[in-house]
Image 1 (tube, helix red, strand yellow):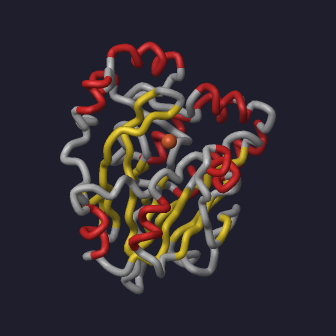
Image 2: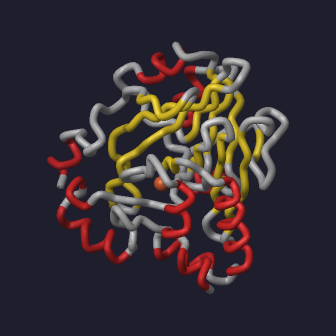
Length: 250
Ligand SMILES: [Fe+2]
């Protein structure tokens, strides 16, 4: 396992390289991160706003010059910690881009603190996009009481940006020992869904989750970027109906 991780391969090579997704939208795949001992491949999303500034979602480790490559696209104005557990490299990016403004999910500062990280954020994200980007990016808060994540929709490119709300691991790219857990968590490509434990945490708020899913469907996304695993390049709305079929059926 150690060897597997130390190879730095995640299956989404090339790593630490900007990959164009749509006009003014890029992703970059990063190295593994461990979460409760499990290896997760990482991915960030960069959106260039209409004034040329950049909105950086869930920044990955700054290796192989990826932060400089991002800066070459425009001014890094916003750093986004999109859910309560996605903050690992925010401090590094803050140190590099001192004028950037950090927006963090509810719960992320307390969570980081619990793990000994003094995370500084400038603003807390909520259920409405702030004036800073509301004319271009919509957002909604997904709050189960345990999991808190803000979902985003870039209107011009019809790109939905999720973090952990759907995970879609390609089994052949994952270590053997993890595969049964992924199946149990029902987060295997192509039928990636909300991880089972997260779905359980939402089970006390079925109407709330249904309203959120419907709001995302109403956005009619063409594509869905995910932080972990294969993302959905097309038919985003259809993928939402598939991934949340239980919620829609209830
Ligand atoms: Fe994650």
